[in-house]
Length: 350
Image (cartoon, rainbow, N blue to C red; front, side):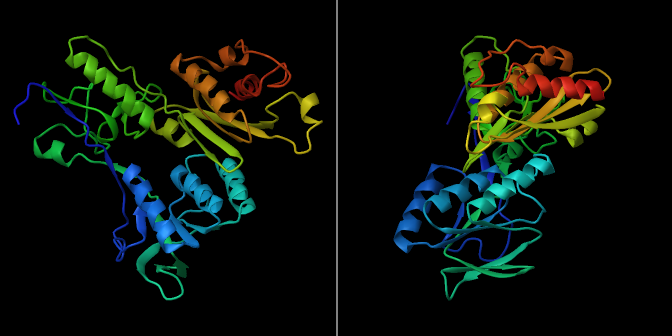
């Protein structure tokens, strides 16, 4: 098919562990709408009662809630120690507690070896730590860029193994653009090209490519890495860099965690269950700038991370954030919002 311009949006594919039986009926990836339709049909037809989720990222967390809301016994199997490893271990422990509170079994330090047809259940997961029965098994092990076609035609592939693009979404060939989960994106905090397969990023990249192809010169300014998910009664969010990423990129990170209420203390005392909010900030010792933030809590978590994402986008210092003008009402926060308090405390540590 001849063309003047080509947009390559081949997306990403769900990572599979490469174990025997991963293609059996009842084993599903978690990538797209087709997966969801097949999963719902299978659960209803087979009357599934037991589910196993391989992996412990935020997709696995969301799927565990979906299974429990269908009264399906759910087990998460993970090679590591704690769920949601992108977040600070102190926050991951809160996430683990929320799993336990909702009867989700978390099995750490366990590697899948094979999947077989079951006897007492439809399937059996064989691990290096024993065997487990299940009616349905989910592969929530992450996403990899689908850059096969790009490699075959000689496009430049980045260090992330995704298609490298410039700020207009153009690839190394002048007539070809790329958008979405198959290509890289510029990270404004690290100053590096990264792989960040998220729906909102893909949408923005698509618009930028379309405008440039139609003759309007527009650049995509990049991302700061804002992400969030909800599981049961918890909101979890992050933006920017963690300490490891900050160190890799030449910064001198200093971090601090505060715990408080997302609403005014006087109002919180009147509530039957205290509402907790944890905020972690990472700053650069040499410049005093914010490098990243994480948060976990029962409410108003994403709104705080969104404020801190804007701060990262604008390259604000911790001093700036400590006195930033935020809307105040006792129902939403104290006179000093936890974002301001966290920034002031971290600034004193630098």
